[in-house]
Amino acid sequence: MKSMQKLAIFASGNGTNAQRIIEYFFGHPDISINLVVTNNSDAYVLTRAANMGIPALIFDKSAFNEGTTITNILLNKGIDYIILAGFLCLIPANLLSAFSGRILNIHPALLPKFGGKGMYGQKVHEAVIAAHETESGITIHHVNEYYDEGKIIFNAKCPVAADDSIETLAKKVHELEYRFYPEVIEQVIMRTLKPELGK
Ligand code: GAR
Image (cartoon, rainbow, N blue to C red; front, top):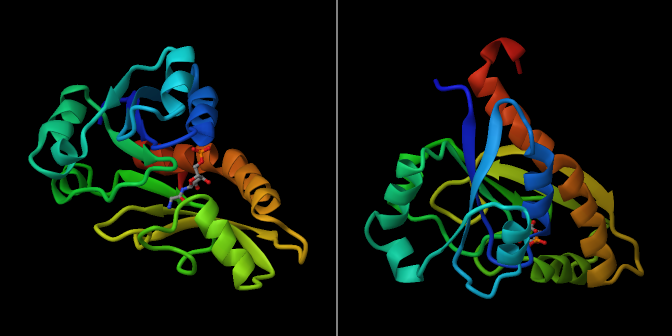
């Protein structure tokens, strides 16, 4: 395996996680962020990517879901891993098989609860509060053909207070995301790259 592992971050919106991941891997000896990919030409993640000098690719949904154009672009750029960070679309089969075991996602709740189609961002926190949960958190998992159902790699929890709003809960969950997602990405990749580092 070549040593420098190239990552593409897929994001549909604000991109605070994408920014955090890009910052974390600046100057890393083995891992680089080479591309930001989005389905949304208005996504603020594009401004963040431009500010940090990371190239971006905006795709149209039909090109993403039909044919192999996006997969081929990623393979031609030598991308090794796909990191989903607030990405709304389901990953099509050809992309999944080209990057088998090398696509990670973060979900802003404790899966398998509060996952699935349409469970995205604020809607997840709204559902957690409506269900009177006393804890929430983050789940980092491998991606398969279903929304939020791939093998779980890591989770971290935070309390949900009786007076938490969507905004205050989102803030707690975002803090966990910023703290753990870059590190977990690094661990998953480095264990594959250098198995002697162990489990
Ligand atoms: C994050 O909280 C991420 O976990 C969530 O969207 C937010 C994106 O925020 N992802 C999902 O809900 C996926 N189902 P960001 O754009 O500021 O990183």
